[in-house]
Image (cartoon, rainbow, N blue to C red; front, side, top):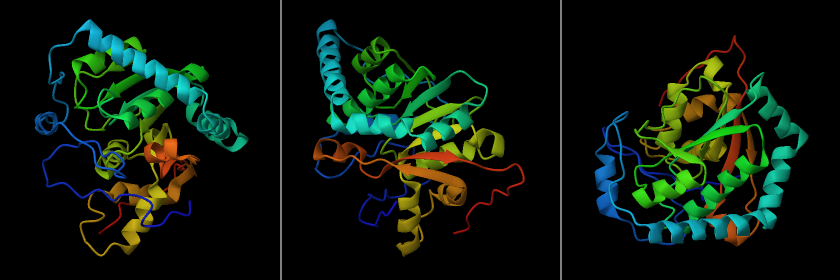
Length: 281
């Protein structure tokens, strides 16, 4: 994809030991619940997790469900969604999906870093897209979701929409023991890198489909960035680039540009005799 350094926001590397948080597109300032973020960042990888707020009520759940249903309906009828589905059904992309599936009937979907669907519009649109994909394609299996900022109300609505909310923080380090679609729009580079590191082998990488920030754009930014910390959390991203087939999506209209700009599908076609070398910075 012909992306420039201005096309994607480069996340600042976090100090060692800190957990990941969601990076939302930065075209406009948004209020954030820093109490939630701070408490979530203190959690350690693999640590059991539960929503920060332990109270919910039927009215809040009903309002959020109605809002999600409205977003799902609007997205389904949009020009962007029709083009998105057509791209997936194109012969070239269909072939890549079938190669990842192999003899399996279903491909699990894991959603990381979705953010707060109660507080922000981009997470609602992103979740709507994932749900519509699940409804459209019979080969998509169970859908699991995790973000440390998910509230109890959001957790209940996610369950009602057919998603399972994880009870522990995987830090993005899920190993693909079976074909898995990782749905991760606008996550930090470090989370993608965690995922790749946990699956750094031919068998597991070839079982992954990744929807998220363009790896090509990360590579372009890394090539012009003079700050030595630029690529610190991107070692595996940069190392996997030569084995990656990337399909950028086109948000087309401003309604969805903010939510999906610089997003791409990534497939990893690696031969058994290939040498996976980590990029030295």
